[in-house]
Amino acid sequence: MLADAESDRDFHIALHNIVTVSNSMNDKDTDRVGMLSSQLLLQCAITGITIGSLIRPVSHEGFGDLPKQFTVVDIPSLAILTRGVLETFLVHHHVCVQQVSTEEREYRLLWWDWHDVSERINSLEGIGSKAPKLSVLKKRRDKLKITLMNHPWHGRQSSTKHGKSLFDDFTKNKPPKDAFLATKSEMAKASGIHPTQHWIIYKSLSQYAHAQPVAVSTLLGLSKDSPDLQMYVRPLARYATSYLLLILRDFLKLFPQARSLVNQDFERLEQIWTGVHASDLKSVKTFP
Image (cartoon, rainbow, N blue to C red):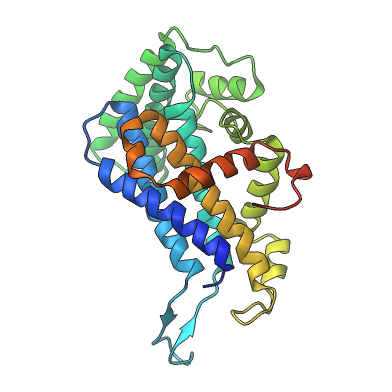
C-alpha cells in the first residue's frame, strides 16, 4: 500500500461502509430526491473502489519493454478522483440534502433537468447533428423553461452575482453555465465545510486535474520507492476518506433506516471529519 497504515485503514473503513449501504439501498422504492441521492452515493462508492486500487496498487504486466511486473504510482488520478468525490458530495448536499423549502427543492430539481436537456442539445448541435431526438429535446427544454419561469421560486437568487449570471443566460437561452444555483464555495459552506477547507483542498486537488506546474514538479522523479511518497499519498487518502464519510453521513439523513448498516468505526470517523472540515484549515496543525 502507498498510504501509511492508519490512513489506509480509515479509508477502507469509509469504503466498506459506503459500499455496504449503497448496495443495500440501491433498489429501494423512493421519491425523485431519494433516487438521485442513491445514484450519487453509488457513484461515490464506485469511485471509492477505484481510489482504493490506487492506494493499494496491484502489479501489471505485458506493456512492451517495461518490466514483466511493475506497479504504477498514479498520484494525479488519485487527486482527480478525490476531487470527483468532493464535487459529488457537494452536489448531493445541494440538490438532495440541504434544508430548504419544498418550493426551492422543486426548483433546484427543475433547474437540474433544464441543465441536463440543454447540455444534450448543445452537444448535438455542436457536431451538427440532425437526429430526430434533437427536436424532442428542444420541446422538453422549452417546456421546462416555461415551468421554471412560472415557478414561484424563479429569480429569487438573481440578487447574487452567480444567480444574476445564471438567470441572464437562462433568459437569453444561452448555453447553461451551471447546473446548481450556488457556487461550489457556497455549496461547501452550506454543507458545513469551512471556506478555507474547501478553497485550499479543492485548489490543491485541481492542480493535478489541470497539470499545473506545482503538480508536475511534484511528480518529477517520484516512484514507489521514493522516501517522500507517503507524504503525498497520505493527505489524498485522507481527503478521499473524509468526503466518502460526509456523503454517507448526508445519505443517512435521507434514509435513517440504513444507519443500522454502518459500524461504530464509521460513526467515530464521521464525527472526527465533520469537526475537522468545519474548522479553519489555517488553524488545523495536524490531521486526526
